[in-house]
Structures are given as C-alpha cells and as structure tokens.
Length: 244
Image (tube, rainbow, N blue to C red; front, side):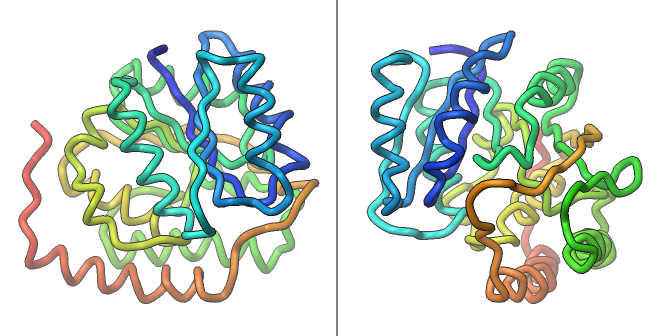
C-alpha cells in the first residue's frame, strides 16, 4: 500500500469515472484510489472493476447495496483506509469539479504542518466557474452561516475536497457522525476543530461538472441549515478531548 489514497464516492458516474481514475493514478507523488459506489445502475462499478485489471494494487472498489448518502460513503471509505494504514486520506468528487492536480497542493499543506487541508473556493474571493449565481450565493452564504453559528474561522466549511492526516480520522468518532448529505462536510470539520487539529485552506478553482447530473437536493440543504444549529447546541454540552 502507498502513503496517500483518494476516496471518490460515485453514483451514476459512468461518464467520468474512468477519466478521473486515470488522472488521479497518473499523479506524482503517487496516489492510490478507492471508489465507493452506491450500486450505480449505469454500470459505474463495472467500469471500475475493468480498470482494476490494469491497476490491481492501486485501484480499489467498495460496492454498496444502495444509495445511502455521501456521508456514509465517506465513513465506510475512511474505515477501509484506516485499516490499510494510509497516512494521508483524501476526499474528492468524481466529476472534475475538483482538479486532481490540486491533490498535490493539499498533500503538501499537510506535509508542512496542517492536520487537515481544505481545497477552498472562498479563501481568496469566490473561485467558482460555471455555477449559476443563485447556487454560488447559496454556497457562499452557507459557509458564512456556519462561521456565525459555530465560531469556526473556515471560509469554505462545505467543501468536499479535503486531505486528512490519519490521526484526525482516528481521533474523530466516525461512528457518531450524524449527517449524511451536505452537512456531513461541516460536521467533520467542526469535530476536528473542536479537537484542536490544525486546519488550513488551500485556494482552488471549482469548476461545475460538464458530464452527469448534480446530486444536491432541497433535503440536503435543509439538513445543513437546521443540522448546523443542532450540532452547535449539542457541542455546548459535549466535552471534546484535545488532539494533543
């Protein structure tokens, strides 16, 4: 096993999965790749299985029985990666909204002292391409709302492009992560922050997908709005052990 692995959750990503996988596996320093597929009816997992013949020791696949939410896909992926003793564990989307080349910059940030490196759309303004203005405003003000409610000084708390050091995921009680959708990313960052881990934001340019369909829904947004408030209230009566 290598030192770095990228978790990519998929559902109906047949148009993107081969290209994103090949790109990640071509990078230097090298990254392994774990696809967590939610039983995509379009054959995404079959394509990954075919690619495993070409990359037998670097490409891995977790097949889930049904579409069960982004958060649970990552939790299962984290658990798998921790068993394999990877030191740096990454999250990213399958649709090229996150540039795979930026994995190198996130890794470097963690090598240079960060415990978590976030690929941030908002640390140097608003770096989003091809989103309608309504969605840009929704995402930007969602992060502003999270900062106001939680007190975290993170500009892009909903970001899904992240590098975690192994010890962060070992410290956070992953089995107690509540949220499954949009709020999952916020909850992970909030718990890491409460444990005192060092979090840094690395500026990226986020480009909306050109193939496939977005998975965001009104239910996911509602979970984030009310969930963040409930999460903060719960934290006021919960003691978090410092990471150091």
